[in-house]
Amino acid sequence: MKPAPFDYVRPSSVEEACRVLAEAGGGATVIAGGQTLMPLLALRMSQPFVLVDINGIAALKGVTRVEGGIRVGPATRQADALRDATLARHLPVFVTALGHVGHYQTRNRGTVGGSIALGEPAAEMPATAVALGARVEIASVRGTRTVPADEFYLGPYMTVLEPDELVTGVVYPDWPDGHLVLFREVAQRPGDFALVGLVGALVLEGGTVSRAGIGWFGMGPTPIRARQVEAALVGTALDRIDPQTMARLAIADTAPFDDHHASAEYRRTVGARIFARALAETLDLRSAA
Amino acid sequence: MSEHRIDLTVNGHRHSARVEARTGLGEFLRDTLGYTGTHLACEHGVCGACTVLVDGVAMRSCLMLAVQADGAELTTVEGLAAPDGTLHPVQQALKDNFGLQCGFCTPGVAMTLAAVTRDHEGPGLEEALTKAMSGHLCRCTGYQGIRRAIRQLAGASA
Ligand SMILES: Cc1cc2nc3c(=O)[nH]c(=O)nc-3n(C[C@@H](O)[C@H](O)[C@H](O)COP(=O)(O)OP(=O)(O)OC[C@H]3O[C@@H](n4cnc5c(N)ncnc54)[C@H](O)[C@@H]3O)c2cc1C
Ligand code: FES
Ligand code: FES
Image 1: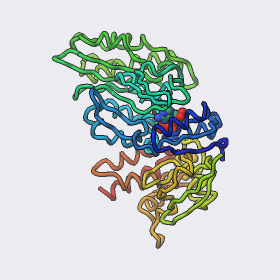
Image 2: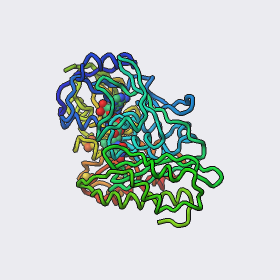
Image 3: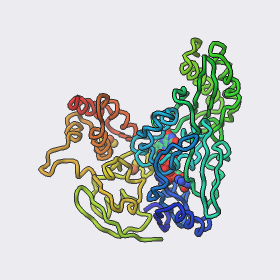
Image 4: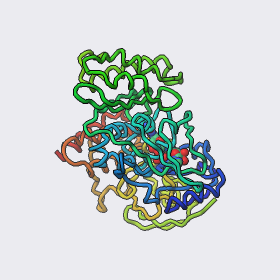
């Protein structure tokens, strides 16, 4: 046995889970799919007194249409979300990004909410939530609150979640059916965390971009919304869009870092390149990089 | 440190046991129940050797706690072949194509290939099997034997 000893509880309701989290006074950790937490426990980088397993809470699972958007329960398995008809039809950008999270075997157990709550800067799901303008629903014994995804992330693996709080839902606002999917990532092997990646949705109306939501992963301490390029794209006719210019604007919002996989300079260069290509391909522009 | 009584089925056999909360499913299968076909290598979710089917779904047994398998039906590599010893088509394909050398990664590979073959509908089985292999590391074969086995499996069902 590698993890340090802990108590295990499997609540069947959100209320019960919140009560256990509150009573543990910061000593409890939520386990969803365990695809990240189990290694952290084995390495003893995480040493909770109580492990709160949310897999038995039916209310935290499934995909539903809500007023103005689509709500994904945090304990929904990644594999189940990948097969979900509502997401496939109305939010293909989400499905494309999710298909790049880990491997077949880890998606069979890992959850959407676990990836969102973890806040790995190179992960696809947090950047997707930020790009699309999702809201994160949070509960504790103190009440509920909703935080926009781009205010949810504070730094690598750091979020606004307090130790007694539980993510209870992620709501993606409606994007019109037929929105274009912008997605590209560079990873060392399929299934690995990305070195650089971008995800976004674009809406076209009469040859002009009418709405854009674009996010970066692996390009800073948190997922980053590419606001400058979004603003430049919206209202611009397709024949006036220069992918290179847009790519320069897109990386202007990023803050990449050096690590043993790649330098910040590499990330910026490759980021600009894949942005220009993805944009040109998605919009079917001629002057691809 | 809590202890729990769990009841589960492995390859059709019922088992009950008391486990410490922190016991991993993979180590429970091996050390408590004796299903040593399930191999543990990295125990960090990276290599895939420990893959088993939990209620029919391929997962890494090192990334689950034994207590989380309470009530589940598990299939390990010992449960793939027919009772009379006839190999599962996945095992036969790996054997026919030198899809294994030391065999350490093989139980996990076999469970993934068996699950994908069972679930896949329509064309594209070879691609689906190849993609699912990204979740496994093999230090011996260079993967070419495994790819040949995949082609045999995909051809057989085409
Ligand atoms: C080999 C391998 C490759 C991977 N590759 C990728 C990849 O390319 N991209 C990627 O994004 N991920 C990748 N992952 C990680 C991904 O598989 C995990 O599923 C994900 O990071 C965490 O989801 P989980 O459900 O497993 O959460 P867990 O591991 O159970 O939890 C992760 C963290 O979130 C917290 N948490 C979970 N749910 C909640 C909740 N509802 N409320 C509050 N806190 C919560 C937990 O306390 C923990 O701190 C990989 C994992 C492995 C093993
Ligand atoms: S032992 Fe489970 S993935 Fe390596
Ligand atoms: S056969 Fe030896 S690791 Fe795959």
